[in-house]
Amino acid sequence: MDTRYLVTTQGKTLGASHRWKVLTVGVAANAGFSAAAAGIPTTAIWMRTGYHFDNAQLGVALGATGLGIALSELPWGLATDRFGDRPVLIAGMLGTALALLSMALFVVPTAGSIPALPVLAAAMALVGLLGGSVNGSSGRAIMSWFKEGERGIAMSIRQTAVPLGGGIGASLLPWLASTHGFAAVYSALALLCAVPAAFAIRWLHEPPNMATTSPTTSAGSGPATKTGAPAQRSPLRDMQIWRVAVGIGVLCMPQFAILTFATVFLHDFGRLGTAGISTTMAAVQLGAMVMRVWSGRHTDRRGNRRGYLRGSTVVAAASFAALAGAVALGHAAPIASVIGLIVFAGICVSAWHGVAYAELASLAGPARAGTALGMANTIVYVGLFLVPLSLPHLLAASSWTMVWFAAGFVALGVYPLFPRAR
Image (cartoon, rainbow, N blue to C red; front, side, top):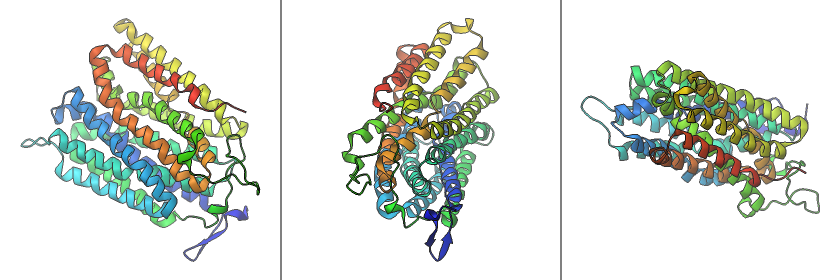
């Protein structure tokens, strides 16, 4: 056993195997919150009808969650580095569950009352503000429990929780929205956020040796001190970390175009019903899960995180170009091919997440990983706010072909932001 991981916390001796329980907490927490952040947009058709929104108003409502997360990610990351993973994750997940339960009670459309857009947007933003705690805290916990050579796969497994939660949402929430209404949607999500908080109370502990655990020695480490340990300067003052953080945030924007408006595209352009929409979106999430695990394992074995990230931008751009080309053919293109390209593009633009977060956290070092991950996720969720807000206007001014072409152009533009392989 690697004795580096033997610690005593709250009177309990925890061995190396405990890191898998910590990873389980991270996966459960991210999946629970992702079911809300990525799952609610899959109810877009029913939200548009139930709340009496047009596409622009729908974009504001869906983007509000991203705005809330963007505003809270960096403060949550700083709090994680200051107070530890455990209190931040538990407080954030319990708060998110309570916010969703309040929505189920007070912010649902009924026969006699339709909540106004500002009310729903404020509630969605509050869910984002509280749920933003999960990213930095769970990532820092995993970085402190796993050593180099394991971090790529560990962070990628954690990142599978995002499409896992999104897949649960895509499979469950459209059915709940169409048959039982939004009270059932928000109640189910509250439960999905409360359960991981219970796991965190039981299993999430911070190893006291974390502060002395050296960051990775792979390409991309910070400058070394005389003792051989990388210097511990703030990620906020490190331009290389900022470049990777911005690259992560911008490359998520095409993914958010799929997650927030692919259901509308499939309904309006493809004429798909509930079953077809749910199946397509679940396929995107399942494929993303598989590819994230493969990507983490592949880059751990080859030590090529940087090269892989640069290549991912090109592959994502090409997938959106192919989708745009198929849509440009109109209904002359078989709808099955368009659906297949939506799934393919969604997977390509989602596969790199765990690798990117592992590289970013390794650049910062475990003791500063919360701040670095908070920086990236702030930009990520600014994108989740801006994409659904701006996409309806781009669509109104052009076409679905231009929407998907623009998504590919954005993905390609990230290429120079990721560092070169050494």
